Image (tube, rainbow, N blue to C red; front, side, top):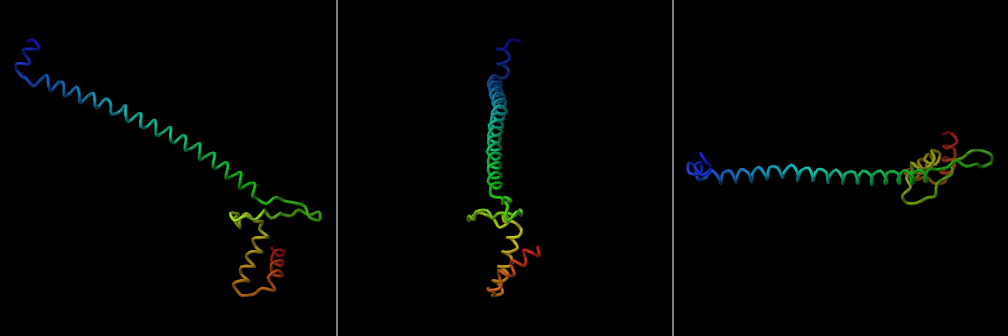
Length: 127
């Protein structure tokens, strides 16, 4: 039987073959499109990771430069107070200064003022 004879048996056969071929072509394109989208997203994530890494390094450098550095006063090692800026956390201060701030806060809550410095100095020495 020739192609023509088969078409006589089922005249819709060529149309069905063409339709199926179009479906298969579409199915073939979908994974290629998905693969391209996955690759593009991976590239974006790689860029985001590099940016995050650079920002983390920059923040770490900024924090390290804000940390108190030991100095010498009267032949003794002491921690210097970092320059005060609005974004410096109390945790960046040396422990002695953190204790002083705690004593001052406590005195302020209790409504006391004159003895604050004496208590703060005593707290640091006891520390």
